[in-house]
Length: 185
Image (tube, rainbow, N blue to C red; front, side):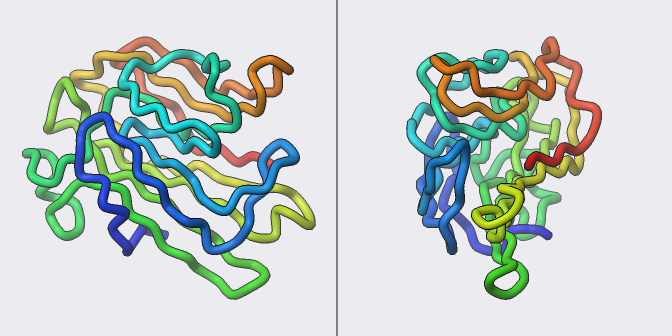
């Protein structure tokens, strides 16, 4: 489900805070907002805009989902952005379904910092019923192009780094994007 509301994240290395339409639980903590990084991660506690991707666990960044941590740009007028809907890169969101079974869809329409023609399109889907049942979120990859990547490709989810609660889906060298979609409960 593509995002339709512009989060206002047309930048390089920035954070945009977005209110969630429902409370979301991650590792036992409830959240009403999320800090979205132009570099492909969703932070529930921290607001780090660093472009230097690292393998999970990401020290001092508790409670984060990393759909596609990479040095990305969501500036509006870059060359690779022109073929996205509306001709613009950015982070977009939408809500689908009806309460209590809504899905909050967060879509990154980005390009690589090292190659503004390499498009990176992916979504994080957060499920409303996750509090009562399965605490679910999905990561869905669209077009992922590794040409010009300057950082590691990292993805996964983590709670507190001190307690060791994390799942690393992948950590690949620059140029090797992820292989497929992920679902977490």
